[in-house]
Image (cartoon, rainbow, N blue to C red; front, side, top):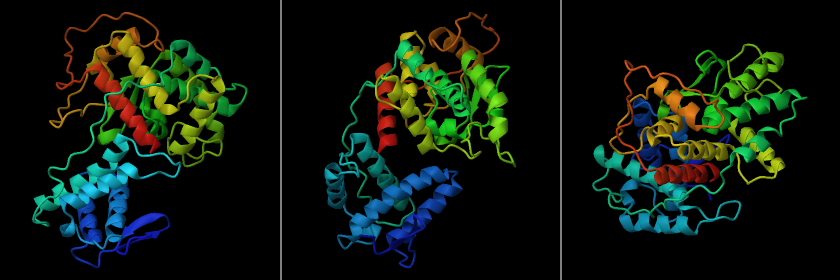
Length: 361
């Protein structure tokens, strides 16, 4: 049942703002405030989905305004999420419940801060604890090479796919980051990739292996020029039609290669897990892996400083099997600035597992 104070147009949720105290008006004002603060449209879209589902649940119980929501009501919604079944019949995981409740808590914090409600019913709401889990689906070096070798290099899409797989394996970037990667983001000379507007709208520069660069270069020379459409938007990896691949299709492609290799089940995030685990086992300092992954905001203090690219590349080349092992003399004059707030290896891998669960929700 569609909530009474909202409607859908072309698959997009449009909030009804006729009631000045209704969920539609308040949520729209909240999103306007987030845009002013620089939040990305992807973040707002995620929050919109969570708040829409909550609003629909409220309306089905005769509630249309945020000021009508009490803590017992929020606890009831949380119990509803625990028993909720997705389209595939599976229950939401703990991180899935968190991803639906956190936007609601943030929304009520904004309401109370702007004096739009008298009290915050979500202020002391307790969410289920996220277990510190080690990732299950991790490739070893041989398995990774088996997956990479499945691309048919006699076909244009095979060369493209090999370049994409090598990039995922070498860098551990998110599927959205790979999807958004542009040609000018890859520095062949420095052996580095710039990730622009990653999670949290943060840019970062990370190393990439020489082998991955060779495959990217082969794709850029032999495949991309023949499929790109003008005007060229600069997106690195394209469909054979010339359009950007898209995250859904990207997942399908990687999943198919992993399945055909006969190794563990997984997709893009498997390579992210694998990269982090291999560098940990190789002895890399957790701070460098955090930067590679883009996990620079890991505490509420939001301490953020840049990692020295020179030192990061040294660590990468000595701990990731995708990179050639070579020693370089450290420049003593270049400071090594790192994240001041770090986590343990188990916590980092647990965070990766939670990321994967959110992607599959």
